[in-house]
Length: 132
Image (cartoon, rainbow, N blue to C red; front, side, top):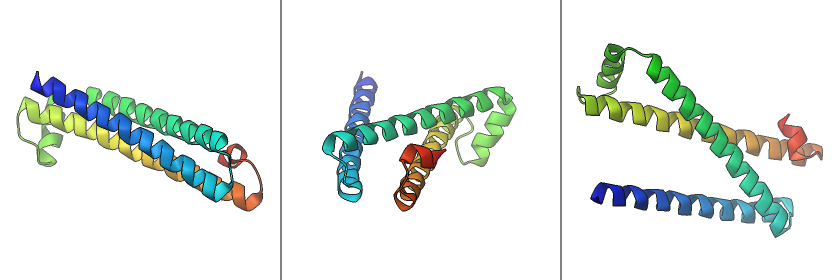
């Protein structure tokens, strides 16, 4: 029960963190781009959704890649990464690999969004056009 409560608390913290990030990005868009609060919030939420989707896709792909590995390959990879040579160590390695793939994809999506926003501002076009 304690583990379940800790997991729920961690999920709640993650949701709060996401809301704060959207609020911060909304303020940033208002200041830098002169958007109204409504426009800025809509754009910040859209960016967050695109980042979430990129993370979900990357995590799924990493999970599929790991599934295709043999049990020995998984154990070897986990051991090489410094995880204990146990089933729990392999499971932790798998979870960490998926998390790392998600975080990397979300960072790359954020960079892509920022680059498109800068290009849009420089060229006087919409961000959507700049992302294409």
